[in-house]
Length: 594
Image (cartoon, rainbow, N blue to C red; front, side, top):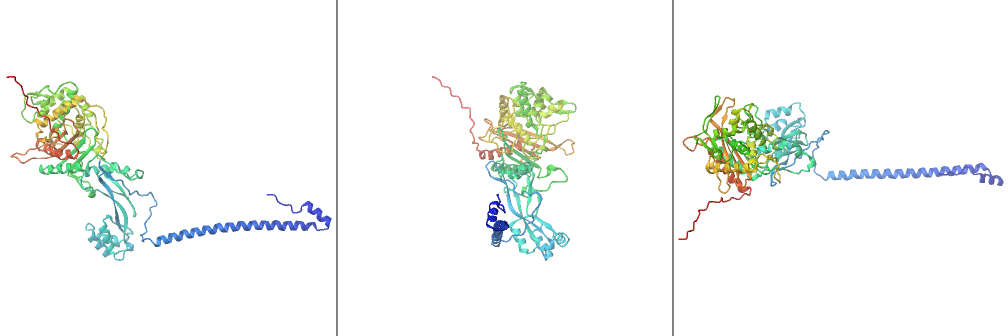
């Protein structure tokens, strides 16, 4: 800025010429400068006051609008704000392969008390005990009249119960919003879903966490806000699961079995269409974990995945398939079935009288222990162990359940000659029914490894090859003959060409002191349709007994096989598989010229 001098030389000289006082010029210029400075300061102050006034007007206007909004809204109880990490309450749904709800969320409330605000704690305790019979009135009164400032009464209540508590009219009874996990189908697929419970809890929210099954295995995914509530889609078919559980429960009751398990698996994709374990439970009201006794007696125990059993003669097809793969035998090879085979004090014999020699196919059809053992001895223990490992029978399955690692197969500490013989017919090595389903799926799909999964897949798995396709095809044909003319004759289902193998194993005593004489684990591992296999069905029963005849029957042919056949009959149409009429041999007609 250029400032005007107070004593300009030209004006001073002119003033001296005219006789004026030059100092008056300086005073006049100084006065004008001060007036200009005052005008600028006044303008600056007026601008600042205008801006400050506008800011105050905006602030008071905003407050007025907010007060008007609050005055026109419903009153709400003040909520306590958690200053720590926020509690994530929202949890994604779980649906079946067709989008039907298996697990979802329901808005509800929790009930808590602030005793210092109560007017009549005695009446509140009495009426709460009437609304919630599981609460103890004396305990409530002690909490309400003690020194505590906060008391949880119920973690979740129904809308009807909320209204009843409202009617008590006590100012010290308060409600906190909650999201509870709801399983609308009750016990259906309970062992797959597992269940959920509350983790961290606050007055205004609670953390829902998975405690078992799929809920626990995918807990982080289900709680992740980044997924924007996208549901977790399982491979299960709710309709098939319900039908399989109904058939399995009926068979278990009819045969007086202690427990049961079943698996239906797609042999190409590895998808588990149904997985059932009985007895089961309702995940909406999950029972407590057993603290004493055998955990396998608990309804929480998943027999299909966690239960490892000697699955008997269902293993025989593995020994024969491996021998064919190695070129040691073919289906028509004659096998010596004379017995017993002696290994020290241990003898291996057949369950009933058989021909002293029969084809490899008949060894499977008639279920010969001695014949299978001799085939296994040709293979050798090391190669047998490697082949069973390729079938997935020596390690826990990779299915997406938190309980899967506990289903570890029980292998012999030393794999000697006698172990090679007994393992060939399913004794001395314990696996779960799910392991067996995986191994049979490899045979049924042409010989490639497939991993069981509970997540929906739209494409077949392409795993490593375990056996040649022609060996797998011959094995399926042998399993088909077990149903048409062997130990699983009750497993035939018209139009579905069932193939499979029975397995009956004596149940070991809990203390490890041998086996029971009158308790068995029976299994039927099957696949259908045999002409173009699509699914594997495994049914296992714990201590079944068929008592319709004069003598009790405990073998798989009389117990597990009829249950599996009825299950296939029920679920095959639900899975879109049309029955087919098997071609019959037409009578030949000879034309003659006479």
